[in-house]
Length: 222
Image 1 (cartoon, rainbow, N blue to C red):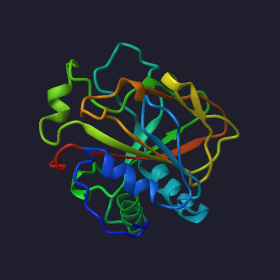
Image 2: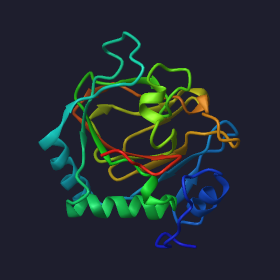
Image 3: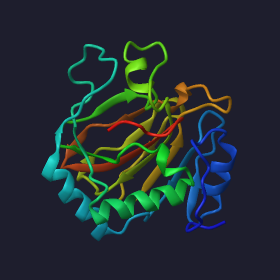
Image 4: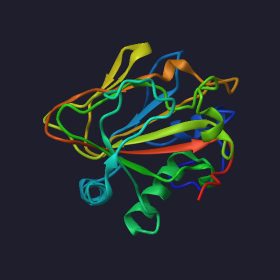
């Protein structure tokens, strides 16, 4: 199996086939931890493609939001946009991510782009929707919970902007075109709280990232 294999591993649970597919690809690094499944791949995107995606984010960015608002107005201070999959560079990105993880594209949410200016951050959070949260039914009634996350750095801010995985105290520095990918669930399919992570404050410059989430069931929202 290679990076161009056309596979369909469904929603990503069970996770073993997804892990095997990702690990079979060149240049993939797996974080050695029993607490969560986390991969990195440098150079997943070339600088020109990153620049094209940055331009799209700047065109349509809006203030980011959170589910289960906790009263902290500074919890997530970035800007967000939804990227139109009919745009060729976005369609190519969708294809590359789907080939990398091997998951059924029908289970994927639309790709989002995020922009972090100086002082902006996303405090420690998980990507799955908390089953006890007040917004759980609202966000999971159609497609279920999130299974896998793929996140890409499009640039390197002058200072700050790293991603910290709190439980294992691992800090990942932004690099142009670097991919992070992790499983939001435990082996039994329940949400994994050890995936808690933080988008640390940008201290100088601007940070741009791409995020793609996959769900338990096919994405059915308009």
